[in-house]
Amino acid sequence: MDMNTKEITKNMTQDEMAYERTEMSSERTAMAEERTAMAIERTVMAFERTSLTNSQTLLAYTRTAIALLAAGIGMFEFVNNQTIVTLGVIIMLLAPVLEAIGLIHFFLVRRKLKALNPEPRD
Image 1 (cartoon, helix red, strand yellow):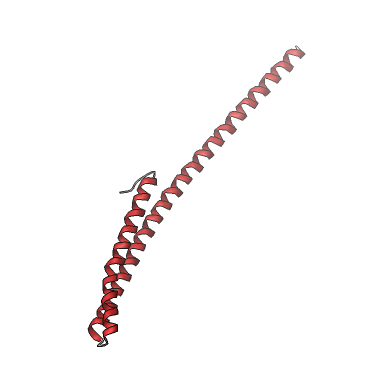
Image 2 (image 1 turned 60 degrees about the horizontal axis):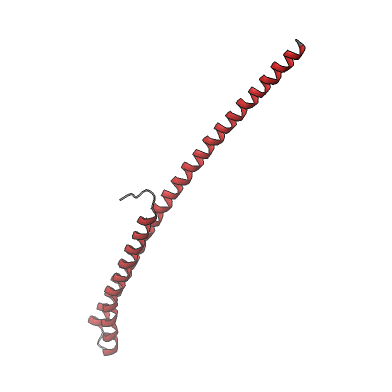
């Protein structure tokens, strides 16, 4: 009977060890799932930040184009020197070109974001 008791104790210990391994495996799986969810959330937030930055960049291009247009109009309207008037006209012609560059950049980056984004928000 002494031999039988040792065998039962040994089996219980192995069962307990198997149970512990299962519990630890479950905890690791839960932690891995939590880390995966956090990584996905960080990725979504990074895409959102990049999209907002892209919009801010377009607004900066627009603001600069408006400033160039206003400066060109000021040079054209309020100065009598022919060289400065010519410079004003050139600056006024550069404003729409700068705005076009900003729009092209905006839509190129937007297309790249949509191609990479795992969860499109639009």
